[in-house]
Image (cartoon, one colour):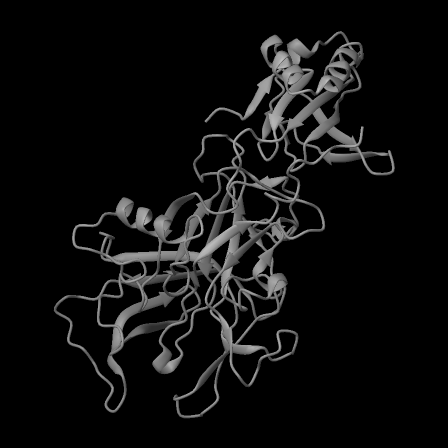
Length: 427
């Protein structure tokens, strides 16, 4: 995939004139008069341009060829230089049209160098979609809605099921996709990079959580009903290949730093033997209590129970491997058997930061900030935006006749697509 910027060219300048943005020409002409300071190194030797022109919500990946310690900075709202990156490669991304000057410094006692780079950001020529446009992976764990949401048909391949998942949740479609038990996941993206806008929620993901009539208050300490929390991971396409193969970061929700949260939790599921003898539980909806066996790296083992409400196979039928392994963060169980006899379960919602955790109309409970990103050691990470979003079921629990807890989702929205459209920068 090519980087989504265009270099300064005569034809492009003419197009800017036709669009009536003559003031940019004066800025660009004046910009060429600005000199770089330091050594005899030139921008050509470094492999970096003076000016980049790019649509909003598209990345410019600047890859200097000169070895050294780099520092990239921009002026903050008070006019002071603010360091935004200390890496050699720099990613520029903006949700707003306008022009932005970034100072590049090479910190070297013998060969210091600094230069300003101008990024001119335009409104997109073809309007972006607010909604999901692509599903990259659909890898559910076994569960009572797997092979049903979306529906598996004989002969369907992994690609077929990814396509069905995409048709279910892309655009304004609101068809639930189930991720099965703990660890099952889906990876999706938009037709642009979702920008990290400081202090604001960046995207929203819809599920099918609801509050019980007895616990209707989203701000109460015991918001409860049906909450099947999914953990969110994000990734930026740093290598620019359009594939979700770059580093992943977890969005640390309200439970991330709590003592009962488990990290590096691994679970393995085993496909049921077709010759297996079912073990029903009398006077209950359980028709096989030892259906899908699982083990974890915490010396746990158990089963996903098959019930009479969902008679299809629970193990994903398009998967050829007889074992499925998932790894991630495991949240503490959130269910309580209110009846004491297994007839009435309530699942308590976590405070914030999880999918299918609160009802969709509670905006701040179903929306997410890229600023919550942490690395695999729990350290905060500053990402300019994300290209790939992954959701996986975050609890490993069986709620009696309700079955295993499995995250469902039906749609996602970039909350910034319309925010800065037709934005006029103050120059």
